[in-house]
Image 1: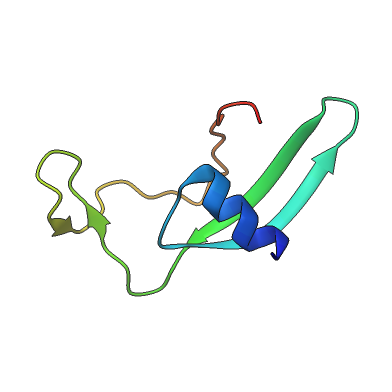
Image 2: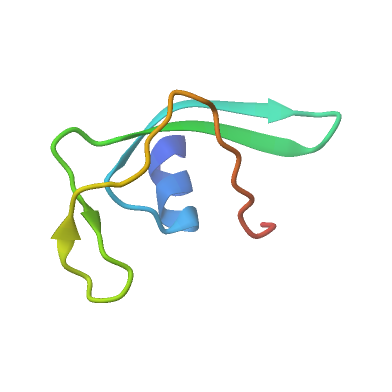
Length: 68
């Protein structure tokens, strides 16, 4: 299985494109640069219907997933 496909499966994320993956040996961290798949709309966390996004930025954001 390709690395990007494996990471998407482990993180359980859909509708994203993994652009880059880096490993930092000092902090034992994996940094994954992602982008939203073109033409995809977000889903409402309450009702699950597709809707337009409300926040976007050009700044890098960090999210911590569970250890694996």
